[in-house]
Length: 441
Image (cartoon, rainbow, N blue to C red; front, side, top):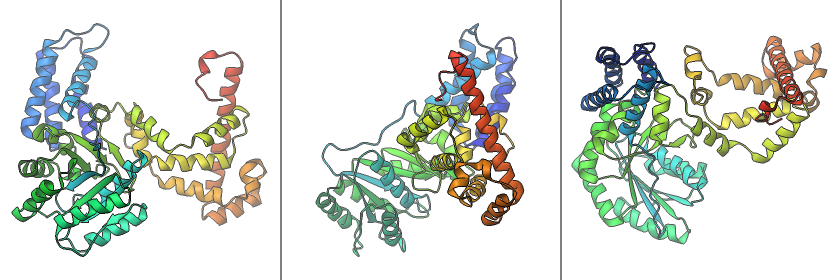
């Protein structure tokens, strides 16, 4: 996410690292590169100007803290300004005290509105809500069918009729939600390839008649300033409550993420970070600022782990690690848990400092497929006791998984190395190394 911007900002801030003190000259040189990086990321020109001016004013006005270097101090200031630029703090979606809460999804055609409604349903269900989707787009061919298929795939009810009146559909869906005890109603409204009076009039009427608790504007994160300009026009007509940025896992330069809050004065509430229907993150400005500056995002990483990891399975694994009984079956199960957390490159990017070490390295999730195929080609006994896998067994496993014998050998060698490492850690603790108490074995 925003890797290109991260790389350019790191290069720009590198100029001041190692300097003995902050001066107007070295600040100016560094900020020229920061300005260029932001403009190339398609950040709004006025936003960039204000951002740079504020950093320069703060950097020259603050005393240099003796315990940190000038470079560290500038990074701290840039980090704080990025947080301020993107909204200071996370803003929750509003849930009405009287159900159903009505969430109206708006935006241009092709921005990912319909897919987002499904993702939001999955997100809210994890929070204990019972959502219902409403097919209120009466113009786009197959929009209703797409939503019905989407709802069926995630087991969420969809309200749709043959009516061509979006307001009538929305009103009738309120009654249907109450009958099915659904506490959140998500309206998938019509979009256009461009903003027109007919669309905006329909959205204004929907807002007036339905009185939604929340109106979210969905913007394509890959379109930069075009997304910001569309958001500004929607705001002038509709006055929405928050922004959703989609396709943030693609070749997103970051312009929309860094500009849209400043231009619209509306918070970014969600980021869509992948194609899967669970690839939706609440937007936290401080975490995004850390990611942009290559500092990682440990809090989001821990939250993802908590959402996907099976606690009971983790406790069983801990006991096996204590006894050094970790098997290929356990290794396979852990791979499945990691896959649920999202793309491997995205997960690794949340670990502080790893961004720089992995620069230029292609992280391929398809490597999981090969490992899974090899383990799935083993018998239950071989998974439990990989030491019995001799030459003939390796050939059979290789043929069964469609891989080379070298791939099977590599997996078994890596597994043995991992077991030795676990054993060494256990030994260090048993010899009284109390500082290793943090390890769960």
